[in-house]
Image (cartoon, rainbow, N blue to C red):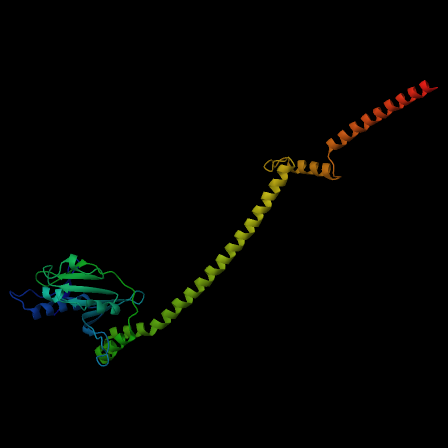
Length: 290
């Protein structure tokens, strides 16, 4: 059935709601809306999670799509619920999470599933009253998952119509190319991460060495400050610090300062005067003795 996009942005299918619709008709109508939504993408209804044989945990999506984007491919899973009991009794939905980046429930209206009931890992689409449009009621969070290779092999081996797709130019070819580039992109990611780790490690070592050098220089400056203060020189007075240091060095070059020599001169003079006094007393005693 042809499909169009409405002015409000919803995905529409050119059909009208019958007066009464059974469960099967509702399910088919919802599947048509999903197919219309992904008409330019890879869309597979009733999509298995891998090969049937030897797969003890086989899951079957009601719908699975791969959005057409090499830079940001998105794998989206859909669970169609035509009646409320389908949703209430569904305990298998967590098993779909490893096979898609986003998982959505799709239902005819919010009497089947309300927004508040949707698990936090999932989203919700609801059909319009005449089943001509899908409305997004809750956006599913994007999860980064490593989807098993067996899942893509199943799609290529069991669901791809190779001859027709090669003629028309090919959703399958896009998937093949994406698979072929997957390992290469993964290796590029590892190489970039390795290079960044080594660059960061080198930068950290350089920073540590700079910090060590600065610490040693600070210790030297502290010692210089201590010596300057001991010499009576303020290290912050840059204008006369050189003169004062040279002056102190001259004073201490011989091991003594100017005050010492002044004191020493005064002492020598006092000793000289004392010697003259003693000589005078000696002469006077000799005269008396005669």
